[in-house]
Image 1: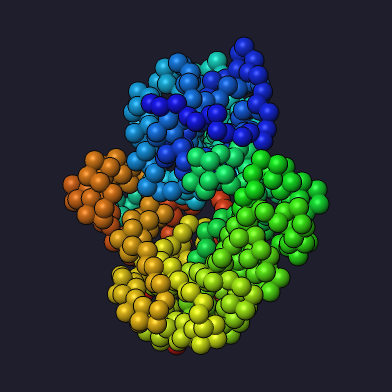
Image 2: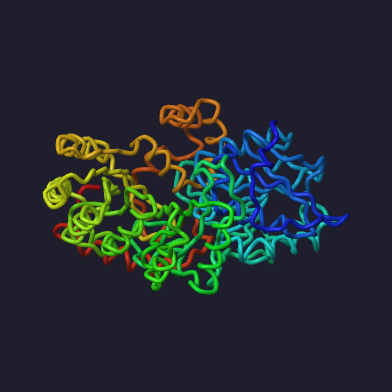
Length: 544
């Protein structure tokens, strides 16, 4: 294991000196250093740990580590991408820790995990983790550490039972899952003993001070970037969108007391700024932020911005981005069909998309990136044609503007109104149809792998019966064929691939995450689902 390039890190916090009895912790990211150090969530949690004198934290990546404690008491993982689970298992083995939680003893650290993947649906990985933190680290981490300290000298079972009583702290082994049969649906999910909460609620940070980079380095995937979170969640609530529904409510950083001081702090060590959030330009004081960045002392600052809402693409925004060395802007349009956008609650008309393209071109941008999906529930052939027509209209309204269209397959996500839909098996053909008709127009069409979408859906809708399959699959590779091979080997012990990926699940059935409460109750999600179906052709499900 190589050492980390610590001499190139510019820290924006002061690490504490650990006390003699500090809890030794390894905080891991299951990918390379350049990827992990670019994760704002990983940076922030690491800094929260490093500024506590009661813990001593060491970082671990797949290609390097800080000096690790000989006897760590806690081992944490931040999981941002589903297939990084392979690296979690490999890192556990490298530390000589059993990958199955049931095989760990008092000689092993408690293995905990957090991050968007585990908060959304930890069940496929439930057998690998002793503890899962559901929600925002600002709310969870301190309570978790304090709770552990109170039972630090106790046996493992006592520690886990106590931790399970802390809001947002989920101990999978303390919940029993039963099934109608080995290949059927879930029958029930219940705590194994009294005193363990029947439902674990995701914890939400509601403050107006959001996250900002705690370290800047040239070794990051985005070299020398300082990231600041402008907003958290999204007010649009597109019915497929995990980034909105799982992270509700919509919160904004206070401009004067939080956002501007954070930016000023970061720009003392770099001139590259990234503004993060699912809907950055919907900050109610975004104009004031642009005015701040347009001051002469920031003329040399390069500004990158996350995806923006289409109808917030204004001349002032584009001119500011061009001034700060940004040549493109990204908008998520999902489809060229106005009707299909009503299905998903995308409050956007095609005319607004065309107008945004015209503004982008007239105000100096050279490239417009659009994102969309194929296989959206309720989608029919006319919707694909509408997408092609939309691009023709954009080309006419903004000649010379380079256009790219990143297109994925709809994948159902937990805690959203569309969690009951399966992946449309015709989606791959629909991606091919769009490619056939868009590339001749000069559109840079960038389809996401349909096979990867199938695997993503498997994990996003999976239950804990998938743990043996995931462990088996990593020995075969990460292709769809590897998963099918593993399913064949485990036939009779879990449902078929189609059950997890393509089947439409019924409202009322027990879902893998039914015991894990997101921001909205199931009854509300079902109301939103019914609203979507009102816009299906002839009032019924078509094209799924």
